[in-house]
Image 1 (tube, one colour):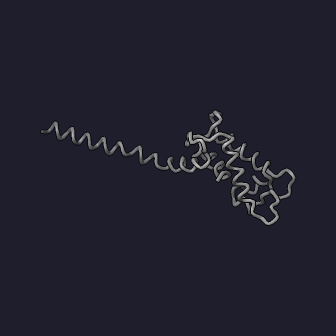
Image 2 (image 1 turned 60 degrees about the horizontal axis):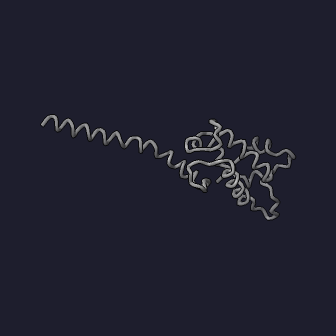
Image 3 (image 1 turned 60 degrees about the vertical axis):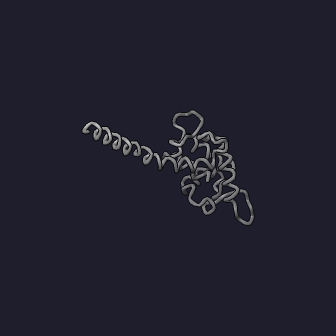
Length: 139
C-alpha cells in the first residue's frame, strides 16, 4: 500500500513538474506568433528576404501623407527609430528616410539579431533585444 501511494505521489509530482516547461515556454510562443506574420513559408524562421518584404509592406502602409512623397519622417515612423537612428539613416539630412534607407536599417538590425550568422532569425533570436528592434521595423 505504501509503495502504491509513493508511486502515485511521484506520478503526481512528475505531472506537476511536466507542466512547468509549458508555462515557461508561453512567452516565447507569443514571440513566435508575432514572427509568423513575417514568415510566409511557415518554416519557423525568417530570412533577410522575408524581413525586407515585411518591411517594404510596412513602409508603404506608414507612408500616409497626402504627397505620398515616398519617404517617412519621425511622425510617420511612430517611434520605430529613435531620433539618433533616424539621423544616422538619413544621409541627405532632410529629416526623412526613403525606402532604400529604411531597408539598410532593416538589414543592419537583421544582422544584429542574427548572432549565429546562419542567415535566419528563429524564435529565440526574435525575442532578443536586437530581434525586438528588428521586429519593430517589420510590423
